[in-house]
Image (cartoon, rainbow, N blue to C red):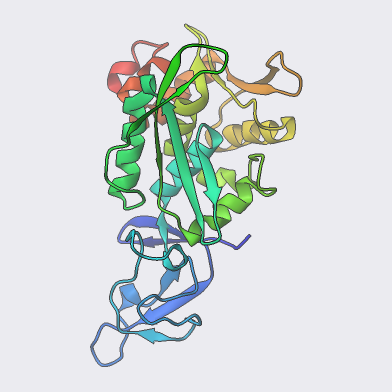
Amino acid sequence: MRGNLHVRFGGRLFVASSLFFLRITNGAGNRPNLLNTILLLSSGVCHKCEISDLIGSFCMASTLPFSNPRINPLYRIGPHNIDILSLLVGSLLGDGSMEKSVNGSRFVYYQAKVNGEYLLWLHSFISKLGYAHPEIPQIYSRPLVKSDEIRYYYRFRTFTFSSFDWIYESFYPNGTRKVVPKYIDSYLTPLALAVWMMDDGTSFKNKGFKFCTNGFTLKEIQYLALVLKNKYNLESSIYKTGIINQYSIYIPKSSFKELIKIVGPHFHPTMYYKISNFDPLVPNL
């Protein structure tokens, strides 16, 4: 996996997934503008210049392709803001998934109709940042197995980015089962934590909160619990679910109160019921 660099630009934190640099001039003499001296790219190609070796090269273009749907995914570049990465990575701990093609990778989101408002919020967040088509996701239907009932659900996909490949390769190293990458502590921000909880969490009245981590191995779950402790000082316990080799993370009441303070500002209103155990805290969200 390629290394990632973090850089602050204009007060915002961005992440680049490769070590390619591009020096661009500000049009005055050949003296580089300080803010534009280094662009961190997620691919080694400048679409406008059509060059692949960017190190030490100069480009007069002031803009580069990022989220234009007409751009070939191979030429979609970063850097990606930490907010979008937080949401994407947090969703992969929950219900989110990824698809890989020869040109790059994309995220897939699916929610039952009952959680439609939450999925539409996810879509709005992602599309407004240029990562998905702005059209509102459609409702789909399919018959349930061994039942006459029909299930209705929302689904949408992000654009395909070659600069998402490092995320796919770390979460799906074998191309099938989703795993917990070692860098998860860097991206488990309060926003990522909130998305994970809204996707795959449940609370118990006047008690604590459970992360449904059934799809991960015990070793991966132990690592997630360690990250919660080291990063947010949250106590937790790991319990068997009753199904062989499946476990969940339980946050006790004492730490759940602190957890609510951390994630509350990022919760969608339709998901407040998951953190409403302690009534005095909920109105302040």
